[in-house]
Length: 229
Image (cartoon, rainbow, N blue to C red; front, side, top):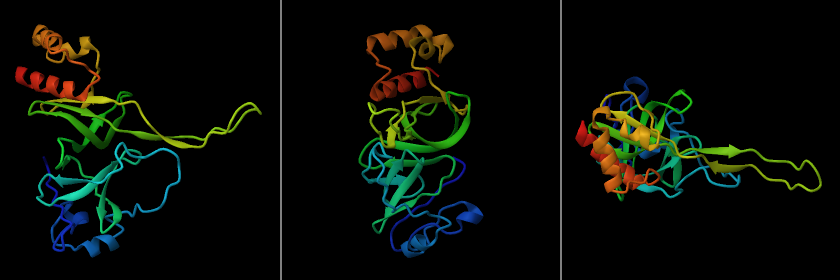
């Protein structure tokens, strides 16, 4: 990790000199944060659009790696922002490459990374860690898009309002320190991740009845692949 973020929501904490050093400090008060629009955007406006921007709307306790302070966060899958609740107001955590956010009441983690999507487009954003190992990491994207409203073309059709809609999950893999790339969930692609160990991988998948549609199984698969490298 190139940089370490320090975040605090206590009366003695957080976020100074971000523009200069891009390091979160524990010296600025909560009131300073609330009044600093350069570092945090206010996300309290009411949105009456149907659907949800979130896979989970609940703010959950979490820690940013490098800090011992517990904060309340949720991932906005529409804007791809990590939102934090401070004094009942919603603010955005400044995005920084390789930032890791770990939920404290579960094994869920998000990492802000550079990656290449299925269309070959290079992006930066939050990916959910499915399997976190020293040499093999498996990620999943959580994306919400705005489905536009549909006006009736005839008297037989009905109007459909715009709505936030969940996109199909995309999975990604990182081997050692290589680039994060799309992970095909076809068996042929999976067994070829470690070319010289194809038979072992195929046997592991069969013996453990690994389902590529289950995140828990992909976590198990990631741990096994890591043991082969």
